[in-house]
Length: 638
Image 1 (cartoon, helix red, strand yellow):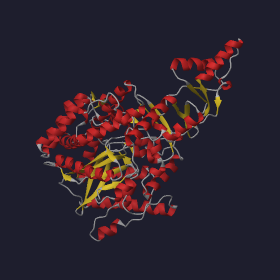
Image 2 (cartoon, rainbow, N blue to C red; image 1 turned 90 degrees about the vertical axis):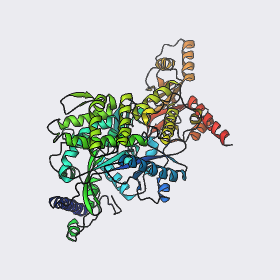
Image 3 (cartoon, rainbow, N blue to C red; image 1 turned 30 degrees about the vertical axis):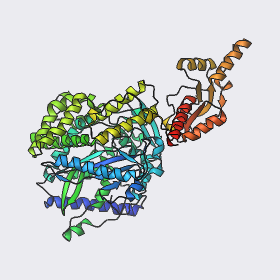
Image 4 (cartoon, one colour; image 1 turned 180 degrees about the vertical axis):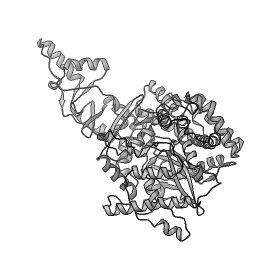
């Protein structure tokens, strides 16, 4: 979005003026296309590395501003949140040792960022969604202090009506709402760029859409959010819902979300994408830019800032990009589907697979539009995001393929052909496509490693918080070793060094799988509930999930004893024995504060409430784990 002032809630005249600037930019790019001004006969590749900053508890570290204050490399830039950063790699000619050079660039860039982060007692992690991120990390105070982000947040949330709704399901189900766009900051990706000529743009872009599903299926690395096991690549659903401004009341209309796969194959020109995004999506931010035709008349090449600003508020998974290199304009296809991680070698392997398929399929087929319905390509993409390597996809041969078999038997040979045709070094082709082949053969994507590790650790009796912390700690360890993700050992237990580090808030310890009752239900039902589920506290809520009271095991036993002694046959309600309006805490409550409350009030459980609704409970068992962790840490530092 550049250094220009970005405006939000501009007056109608300013909106009309900016819309005119966008139209002028469109006319300018059409002029440059007609006059053959774009670079040709050069194939460049590039990438953008997004990452998480983490603290010594393996949780998000909001220190991006401090890191950037010490930064001298213009390639390191801010992202939406204070715990994300992006490192832009230099473009490379697509030939020779470009893949190993890309690998080296990423390693050097990450070493540089890691050095800066350690000055703020932080480290970095590469993963599509950080397993230890929590809703409390997504408060507006953690937004990067840049006017364009606040402007984007204000406009998106205004279009949403002030609250965003999220619903995703997989092994578990997640349903929550949030009042800002910071949820977008849960996602980090490894974005790749492929430069094309204007004449081949439509064909190459359609290929990018075609291969999105198999490439994503083999690269998935985002299976959890807030501890819930959801899609194999949960980023896809999460990002779309984070920026979805459509009204649920307009269900009869065909409306596209701002994050989208597309609506049809491209027929002939990049302008189809630009024009569709302009007419489908309203302007949400404005600024003042120079007239592109004034620049063209003076012999310069315009940056098309208005078009790029609007394009930056519409998020296609494969996006058209305009750029200038050495004074010559060019077009690129930006692939936004790939998650960060698991290791750098995996990222380069994913890139090599995508670059190779782009180059290989472009030569093998003149036009793929007649070979597959666009809706099938779109449904393939969703299936791959949901199921990863377990998905089945429609393919251009008319068959439905298990995606893992399609990758190994059909696509890897085509990718090799594409890389060889561009004279990429043979040893690099073997190395990086070999990673894809071994990963798919073993079915061990980054997502599968996370899920398998969480499952094995759960059997050892650890808490959810311990499992998530352990997951990130081992993830960072293997990344620093440079080991490809399919070779990572499955975690079967939580190390003591990790398990005794206390979480910073009760959100990391609370139980969320709650058994609750209403105040007019039978007390004896509570008794059998406690017996069957082996719990000592039952929360009482109303129909709106608001906390009403709490019942203890002791109070139920007392009631049953008194009833037996008196010979009463009355069916008493829960309200007669519950403690009304119990002491409660929010998910963001510090663990030490929770311990103090339980100790001072001599209670064995604390309900956890957010926005008036019951979301969890912390019991004396959790209390003992928290106290033990803090005690151990205190001894270790004494």
